[in-house]
Image (cartoon, rainbow, N blue to C red; front, top):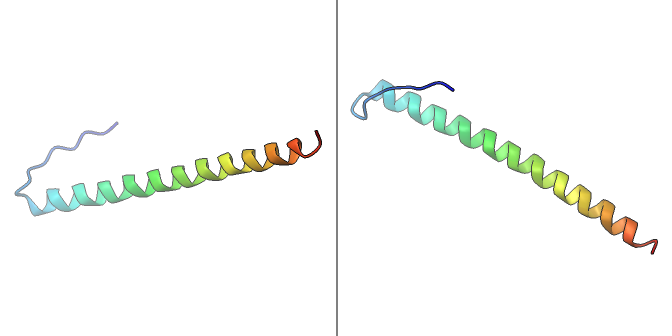
Length: 53
């Protein structure tokens, strides 16, 4: 983990912080998308298995 120290009044610090927050949000969005895809794939598999009983 990297710690970044900055001041809210520093324009460069504010820019870097905003950029980091955007990247973290994008990573979380991608991770959530992949987890959702895995969940629905498992649901489809389970539903197709239930058809045979």
